[in-house]
Image (cartoon, rainbow, N blue to C red; front, side, top):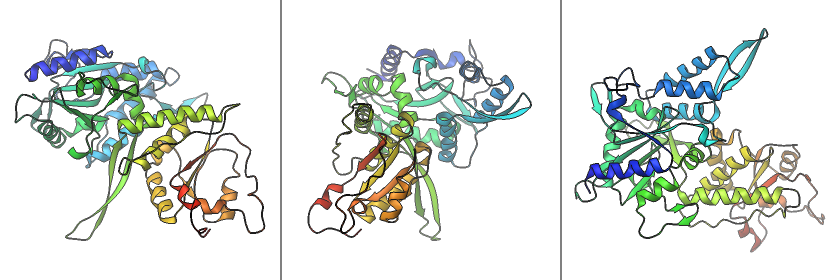
Length: 422
């Protein structure tokens, strides 16, 4: 196969997943069926407008237009900051206000219907030319959801020893530098030579790109290429929208300038690997069953190898619980203060996904007070705070609610040896 064959192969796979296909030059400003006024336009505005009006019938038309303008006018000196702003609009809705019956009302305009994926429009466009600051670039394949370019795919020919997935990644890096506005709206980048295929976030280095090895939680057959399983398992409409809403976080990363000593805080975007995605989905379904009427209250155990992203799996699981259960309180238990602080920092930097700010119990009494809430809350504690006081036979009842979910990280280690400090 040559590169054109690989592109056709990729397009056929995406069409089989329900994507409509359009050829980039045909919808260009000078094309047969133009959908862009200028080559620097990276959003298919009329498609976005139709989706916004369809998904938000209760919001006045001029207010919907105002929300669209906010989405189109994202701008920041830092690409990742602009991308984080868009991710907030995409996953939390665009906050708007309008007058109704003489009263100012607050509302949200949604860009995507996450609950019903097929209510959205999924489009694949190949050879999509973008011109920005005198740079002309043409990514191989771009996936649009409701007119927004959420996925960029760069393809290379596996039979050309100089055209590797690494060179595809370097091409993506060039795009980010020269046509950054395309990546304001990006959810995933994908590189492939048809046999190998890897995906990552906007800020992923090459070593952080990973294949998608499962479809519906099942191991892929040997004769299936990585690109086929990635498109079937990861880029199908339902999974793509799940990854956007529940499995993407922006973490604050502190870096120091070695020359000046000045410390900068730069967001890093992280998207779940396939094992995190499937583990969290199974854990969530088991938790729903365990907390239901007649449930056994046992959600289960997930094993992680070192370096496989245990902390983020816990964040993604908590995010699913916050949005999917009835106002749960989540209790995170560790057995060491340093581990508690480390995990707490990870959760705090993922507030956008969690929709709330976690808190740490400072003492046994403070823990008891924090767990007396009627609903909501993410509370961190060391397991030592759950030991009964001297002379107490048992720890007193804190709540009889069925939707308090306890996540224990390494807490089993405290079962051995002398009892640690509270």
